[in-house]
Length: 158
Image (cartoon, rainbow, N blue to C red; front, side):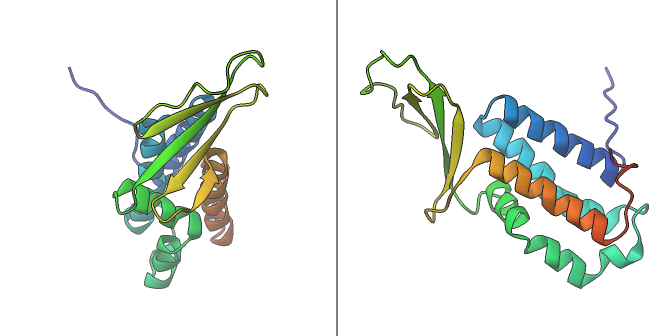
């Protein structure tokens, strides 16, 4: 069986990044965070090597700027395991359930609350905390800003 992936350009990878972000909106798991961060950070190498992108996007200054972008740098650290992290997932629970239950050990810790809201927090080893949806929004915004700054048509990407 031969499997052919259509990941031939930065546009294909960006579409994958959007799908990975949507999967995190659906459910946060360590594997989904990993997929999203690896895709987001690997896009820098796609910029360097994709012949469809303008040469001006491949300069040392531009690539270095991408590597130092706040959100992309977090993705690089998570994707290459330079920073350990854990995810706290707050899942809804009926208000009448006991509040002293719900902590589990491991890389994903679930806390149950009675407010009916679901959120997930990524905690880096240096103590930095942020919501998973903030990571997704920040990364997508970083890439949109890159495309816009270099007049790369989003129509080709979306």
